[in-house]
Length: 428
Ligand SMILES: [Zn+2]
Image 1 (cartoon, rainbow, N blue to C red):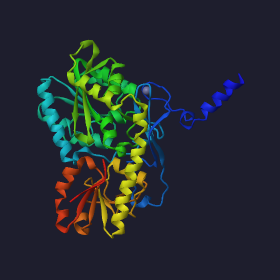
Image 2: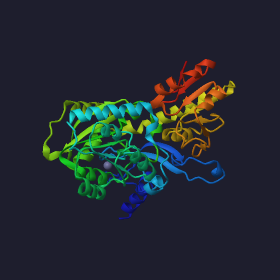
Image 3: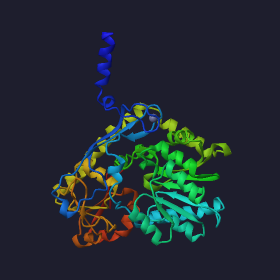
Image 4: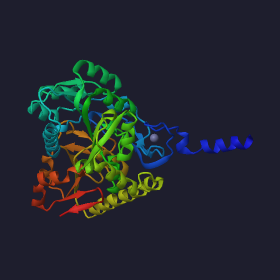
């Protein structure tokens, strides 16, 4: 009896277990660390000039892997209300690459699913209507579901019917009642942001017509690990999915994933295709092929997940070595972009104006503010032409080709581009 008590005391002393974190899908305890990125502020909390002397709230940024369902996830440190309370500064329409991707998708799906004037396309987290506008142009009725009022308003202005709501089972029942079920139900880069995963996926089952199709896009965990994309871990991203795990989550809610595509977006994403299980869809060979590759990669190996942390630390040292060397040689280094991933990278590596004089962003909502926690000023891109820096350090590395093309004039004065991920690389 005494011995048992002693054992329990020892177990409870394990720092991760004593935190009492549970898997957001299967509720198993989370005790295996995937990446510990220290303390960071929320990435959308850009600092206004008048707030520069105020305190900021920092939260742990620590990802775990559940060894029961293999979902990689953050512990719930900041509540979803804290994270999504402020008006989103993010409007999708600013990236040319992403717009092209959206247009292509709308055309492909309209043909593939034979969508027309009697169909309904529903997008979850429809943002400013940047994607649904292409379905509207093809004459297909749409409904956008977007939680941020200011962003949904921008969608309505471009003719995209939108409701201001968080998506979940209750919302799905209401929308189904008012607008009918979806022939195509889609969500791009939303699944990772969902705090209550089970309620969300159950809502998708409710919203989907009997013969309808779901497509969702999200960054692929295997690519995150293989290409060292630790900076895609931030508080707004609660979950990080392998196909193996996402298939399990959808199956638990009566949905079969019958096809999958691997896309280059966001450093390597998956587009999954789902239908109701009871329609017994034929499953494409790509599904078995991807699952076999994930198995080989180590999707069910604790050691594979636990080895990631060491690589993250190595990457931090390499980034800092480059910056220390450049500054020691008297070179001027500035940033390009102020994305969520930049917030993780800058805070985790401790990069402030000691290394980057400033950064620039095309979004007017971010200009004339400062990066959260690290207080690097954010200007309009024209600042780079005025100040002629030696290096432009690209924070949204997933858009590096587009940015290097737009900013090609940097080479006129011998400036060069630096991309930090998967490893520090200078482009001559
Ligand atoms: Zn789990």
